[in-house]
Length: 353
Image (cartoon, rainbow, N blue to C red; front, side):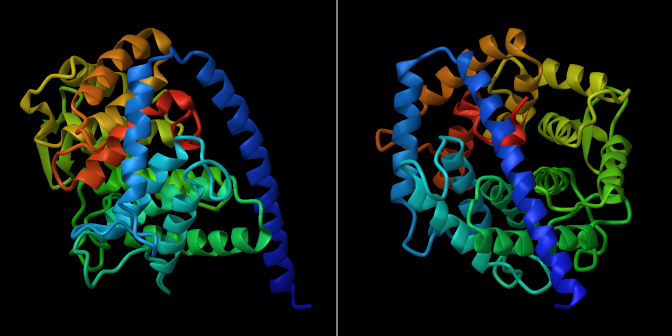
């Protein structure tokens, strides 16, 4: 047998072993997290109705029939369902998660991109969210053939992200080559979290790519501790981008940087009261999807009172059919809200403390 075949098989088996260890560790952390969860019937009802609505919107092909960002919507929805404790083989939403995984795998292209550049002008969002979703699926996939398929898709996706990174270390709406080396904060954070999810699942990720991304975030930091929209447009801080950048830095294992306390102070001063101010720049659900991750990582003393206010607000805004309305699309808003509402359940390794 050729050496490349042996190396590939050994790699797959190492990934399987890493996935098993990650699953055991994930389960233990999830149990610890759930022990701190305070029962709230209103929140639980809201979660169930939201998940049922989301499941009902999925097509037989595994996608959510939205006119915008189909790949991103499938990845975000699938991630929200994994947060409930279901996997591709177990739980009330197993079929929907498996279908979502099939759909996203079908969007994988030869160059590693997960998405369709012909129909999606901002395909890096879908690519990043898909890496995150599939990496969570890989961590609990027991079938070797399926693991091999996921490892192949994610390995090529990681390579695509590295090739798409700009000279400054960030990412834009499209690859650096196609986008004239333009980058901005929200797509950069999506890539960093997706890459971190892959690394946690055993997929090799270049440390150089991660370090360049961290330097990019620090380069965009302003004197007030906030992060600018882009490396080309510094000077004006964005609370949403700052919160997302902090979440990404935590995912990258950077808790002790000299920049982190200033960024955290800025985020708390602008976002912690969960107001309707212009701090979210119209992207409330995006903002709090990331800021809630930041607060959750701080521990229960800060998290629990913040969580109660956040969850009460989200539950109160739910539509009678179980969905939530808002910017982009109800599928997007519902997936974001459900992910936030289920942080305490501890089933998603990428968001665990």
